[in-house]
Length: 332
Image (cartoon, rainbow, N blue to C red; front, side, top):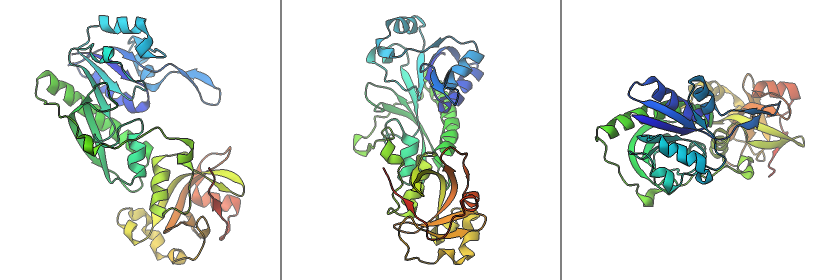
């Protein structure tokens, strides 16, 4: 089967590697986003997908706007590919592109469609506290993640999983599911199933206000926000921005789900508090600050001060000489 692969971030790499390793497929080339300036040196860097493509000496197309790039469109058509595989490419494909390959364009999407259509399904499913998610392969149409679903695969979400953990897990599941999808499509063993529009939810691009922690929210809501928008959620401490990259809600309801936190259940630090939301009510030895929220207590497991590397909550408490009663503030 002749394949053109569309993809950009690390999430797409396992699928490309699976296709390259399987003798049933011939990857004719890769379409990926243009190189971007990254890192401290601000140097032009290729996408993770481009790096893999170059290692395998594959042709690479990097149009700024693929819908308008006549040269790229003409070259893609000339490949006579059987299928276009699309994994987190980052640009919308026109109907002209969707109609090119014989079997159509197959997308690997990071949710169980029709839930969480859009650019950030993994982040928003964590934000909303889902306990299960998965991958759907889809026959693309002109809408945003509205095409008929081909196959699905589910996976549980752990209480302490963050967006990076979950993306890594889903990228591997998606790679296997895509190979299964293509082989079954070729053998005509899949019947595409239209999505139920009444069940559709959306996962839009994350914006700056989404990262701001409002301590009047519940501990579990704040925890889901921190792990969903990892590692960029921010609060204010002693007048300076402070990133919170890992937390844990505390209480009986969570000990069985995350046994590593059970050591905290023996301390007096978990007694009910009349403290204000955002106030440090305790510093758990070996763990870090425990903060009062609008409902429940939140352990700060990993913290990053401006201009510094991430550190454990315990190291942060010691390094700043944090005291009980200090406040974290909410600022947009």
